[in-house]
Every structure is written in C-alpha cells, then in structure tokens.
Image (cartoon, rainbow, N blue to C red; front, side, top):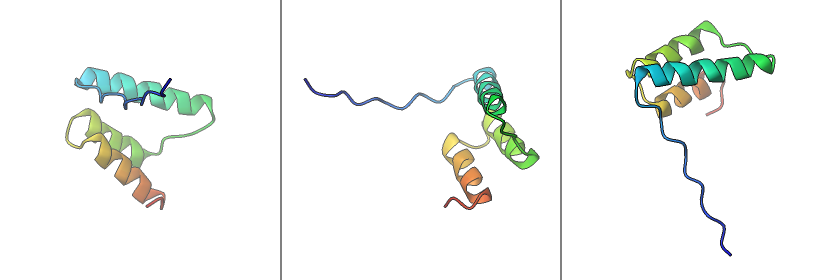
Length: 68
C-alpha cells in the first residue's frame, strides 16, 4: 500500500470566499491568543481584493517578521 500525496488546498476563488477564509484564520489565531496587526490585515485585504496572490501574501508576512 502506498501513501498518497495530499494536494494543497485550492485558493478561494471569489472575494466572498477569501473574506470568509481570512475571517476563519483570524478567529482561529485569536482563539490561540494571537493578534493580527494592522499591516498584516492590510496585506490580507490586498489578497481578498485579488490585487496580490497568496504567495505574495505569505512573502510579505515572512519579510515583516524576518522569516526569509
């Protein structure tokens, strides 16, 4: 029996789906005691609006926190 590869979740395609995904992620973080700062929230809004893709969103976050 071979292990199957798990594919990455698809990026939400509509703005409403992206807002929902963002709100779920923020709520999950808040439940763990995390806080989303204004700069990160602004980047997330850019992703929701479709002006940047998820790879750019992650790159900005990693750069902001020195995780290059």
